[in-house]
Amino acid sequence: MTTLMFKTDIKNSSDVNQISEFLDRINSIKNWEVDTRHELKTLTVRGMNPDANLIKKAIKKAGFKAEALVEASAHA
Image 1 (cartoon, rainbow, N blue to C red):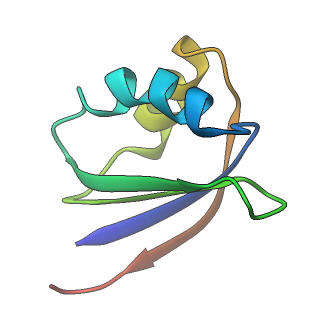
Image 2 (cartoon, rainbow, N blue to C red):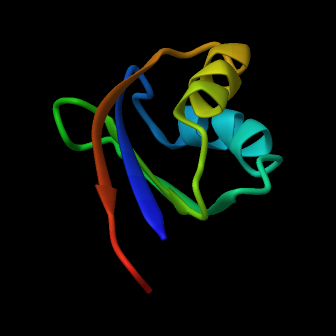
């Protein structure tokens, strides 16, 4: 399983709801979450080789910005 993290401009639960329909369409994503309390508004995505560029495009389509922070692999 691969974990990708992004700095975003997603501010609240309404914004999270707005991006959910875009991220939920990406088959390689097993789960995702946004920490709106963190100053970077961190989006964490876990899945089987999720594509960072595809995720950034999905966030952009939803009307937000995402910048890749860290890629960390872990075996589940």
